[in-house]
Image (tube, rainbow, N blue to C red):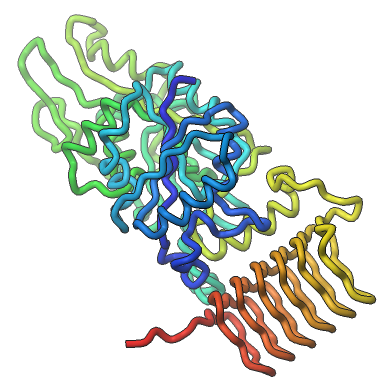
Amino acid sequence: MDFQVVVLAGGFSKSLVPLVSKEVPKALLPVANRPVLSYVLDLLEQKNLKDLIVVVEGESAALAVSAWISSTYIDRLHVQVAAVPEDVGTAGALRAIHRRLNAKDILVVSGDLVCDVPPGAVAAAHRRHDAVVTALLCSAPVSGPSDSGSSGAKDKAKKPGRYNIIALDPTKQFLLHIAAGAEVEKDIRVQKSILRAVSQMEIRADLMDAHMYAFKRSVLLDVLNQNETYQSLRRDVLPYLVRSQLRSELLSNGVQSDENGNGTDAMQNIKILPSQLLANASTPSFHELFALGPDGSASMTRKTHKCCVYIANKSKYCARLNSIQAFSDINRDVVGDANHLSGYSFSAHNNVIHPSAVLGSKTTVGPQCVLGDGSLMVDKCSVKKSVIGRHCRIGSNVKVVSSVIMDHVTIGDGCSILGSVICSNVQLQERVVLKDCQVEAGFVVTAGSEYKAESLAKQEKL
């Protein structure tokens, strides 16, 4: 597959505070004790895509990611790590490395994607249609869309789920409209030209944009160069391409229409309810029919480009680690129903206990758990549906349920941890109770403390 592959690995994501730190950027957050970026790199390696550009926001984050890649994938992948300024966004990141992009087609993959959809399927659909962009769409996670932007247990109760609204043509191959989160209102704005060209629209709210895109390089770079304010592929570049895919030029009479509504065949916005988006008949290849002109004549040349989708089978796993809730959900899934992604061999008890881990008397590690190397659990501990990192020290009578505990954590006797994320080098003193909490790396929780739906972090010094 002669695509150039770019992995957008982000930097220190604000939506993942306090899990991220200067030492642990987003790309290195652990999923089942493996950096989340390893899931994308392994997926690409399995499909023989071994020549990659990994783009990281911020010099220090790029150094950390580069060091990890060098030690983990030596002699396996050829990776260029490119540092770009922080907060430039996905479009800005590609704009910053545009001189390195030289292939006809570019495959762009988010570094926080955990999935088992073969990238070759997206690339094949892209080439088959000669599209300018092809987006991977997957079933939205059961717990809610990863675009929800939830930043922890507090927000989960306050914010309703935000779903993608995606409009497809009858063949489910062409993307006609996309909006998500706060962009979704009671009404949907759709181009008149698209409504005239396509006979039917299928409105879907059960799909998520997986942030795996195949782009025609020349078109992508043109859009980035001409629209310097565009920061996001998802919010800016993709909607722009979708809106403009039926931009036409009526060369026979010199009348030109554009996106802003000028000309006799202008692509004007109209407001329309989803229930109204039904027309009379089925037109499977609306791009080709539109290109012929309204009278069916090929002499009236209309320019058109194709925005396509590849919809993954529902059996495929697909999620993005772009919120604290998603971090917890993905860790749960990768040691649960999607444990084929973990890379581990699960025992007959459906768990993974490293041979160097030590379990005390009457300590139990239940199904859908991972216990990292060198960790010690003293007597009468119970672990259920949780991931425990490397070289942790866990006292007696400790209960851990539906939680993620990172490396080098010390937990005192009698602690209870439910639905929480404990970052590396945290110390929980005796009898601490945490429910739906996140604890920053290096934090010390004093004995007997009880917290519910809290984010525990050190106060920054002024």
